[in-house]
Image (tube, rainbow, N blue to C red; front, side, top):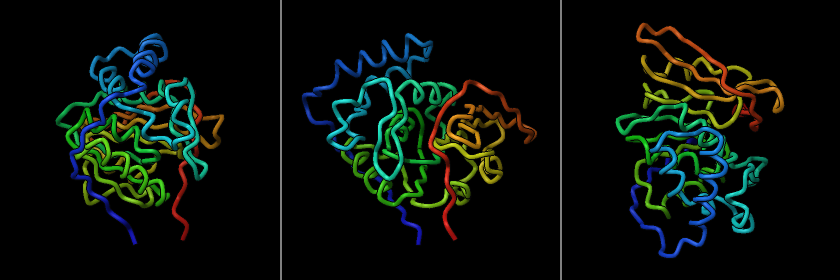
Length: 228
């Protein structure tokens, strides 16, 4: 049975963010220095506490320039990659976004600060639950989580203005292209193996046709299907 979690709490961050300086340095040295320039993306990355989306023992490494394990064979993406994917999505406050691969919930928190609403799907129930708790603690109220198979998308909520995949399928699932609104954009790592993946941007034109472009080589965990 699919589990649906709707976040409606509005709880502020506790005073005294011990990692504020590290977060500012992360944005300056890892993200701006590599060419990410969109002001709203930089602003959100400076203010989103990445450490709260990690297990406690991993929190001191939260702002390092690398992915980190979050359990169940999954990782939280490198901050630079989160920034690049978010910038490529060209988000606005009017957009409804779909994220495939909730993971820690960090990317969903970033998207939520830049869009009207985020629908996010995670195949591992335990990660969906922990991500929901982290988002609730931050007072994020415009994210809806589901534990399920990302290959199927979220047809009941389609169409989406933006779709972001945080795990890599061998090919972009047809269901996701169908659920992308004409004029919409999809950003995804694509490839058969972890070390042969490419970050792809898909634009769905007004007539429904698809235009793809490759951005850079990447290494993501594979996107898995729900077992029969």
